[in-house]
Length: 482
Ligand SMILES: Nc1ncnc2c1ncn2[C@@H]1O[C@H](COP(=O)(O)OP(=O)(O)OP(=O)(O)O)[C@@H](O)[C@H]1O
Ligand SMILES: [Mg+2]
Image 1: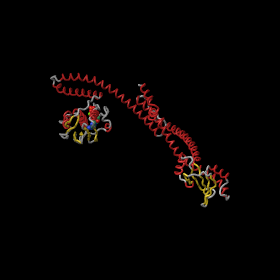
Image 2: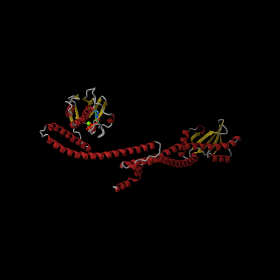
Image 3: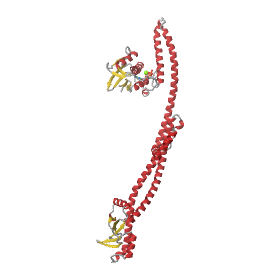
């Protein structure tokens, strides 16, 4: 396996490995992004700075020409002497220097190599965009091309004009561009490194710490030494660290609790198992009792048998719950009214003197459910209601247990309504938790947990729709099978 992965790493090549690194590490992504963003910022500064350099360069040359022109303007000569003219042309790197005042142009010096002019640059009215465009095109233009540049003199309202070959400014522009580019690169590497280091320490490192802790914790969540130790940070990462530590602490406590419950469950299962065997012997003995002719025995034997039967059922249900032995529902179309009547039958509700039983479920209403499991669901809910009403002291009203049902699209809703004392406040939240919700002596607190488990296997639900001192309504929703 390892050999395989080594070979595949090799086969991937440099590009593949770089791609992997970029995709896997937050820090690598951050480094690249920082460098790219700083470089973009540098380019945005670089381009206008080249245009600015070109303007300064041209102005400098016009100023040089202007300095020479002061002497010239005082004389009445048509042109400078050949020597002076040559010096001026060299100093201004121009092919011709002219001055224009009062609408009259005077040529101060010329080399005689004038050609076609590719551009006329007015330094008095240059725009930022025009300068950028012109400086970029000058960098890549034919060096022998000629252009004319002019601008108002500083010392007088006359206009100074130069004709220059592109090569001089081009060379200067390239030197400048190279220097600035080099400097920009240095600055961007330096800035990127600083930004990266700051972000790495502030964000990446804590995230790496958090994620590696989560990784280790998820492997052995019961290890107390792995609970995250938050730093003193007060920002969002600090909050995340504190929440993580609190969450892991809570989780460990729940796990410990669950482990203890599991141990307890195992012990209960074992006790139940043996208890069931003992009860089976008791069942045998009590069966024999029915054969005795004694009228007292005849009177109490069936009750004893019934009680033992119930105890056996009870131990069995605890064992089944512990092993989670509920079979998946075998669903078919069934008449809900009949199931409710079976429940009333078993609970002795139909002949009950103390409780009025009302089955208002439409006779033809069909649900798509496992008949045995739906029976157990309704039986648990109805039995609770029955017990609650029997136990309660409510002389001022009729004790009534009523079931109603209707179809809503692809669901059947069954409501079990009683006029009992209501579910105690502290029980409401835990009523569906196994072993937790019971308030009765002898109650196991399993009835509602089992009912919930069975209805969930049907994709349905049980809700307490109402519960107060006037009674309780449970709503059972049984969706059709999809
Ligand atoms: N209709 C109701 N009216 C009042 N209290 C109710 C009603 N239904 C349930 N309860 C309360 O909810 C508790 C939990 O019911 P659940 O059926 O889960 O356990 P149990 O009835 O105590 O034990 P068993 O496992 O034998 O059913 C009951 O003890 C009772 O206090
Ligand atoms: Mg119950």
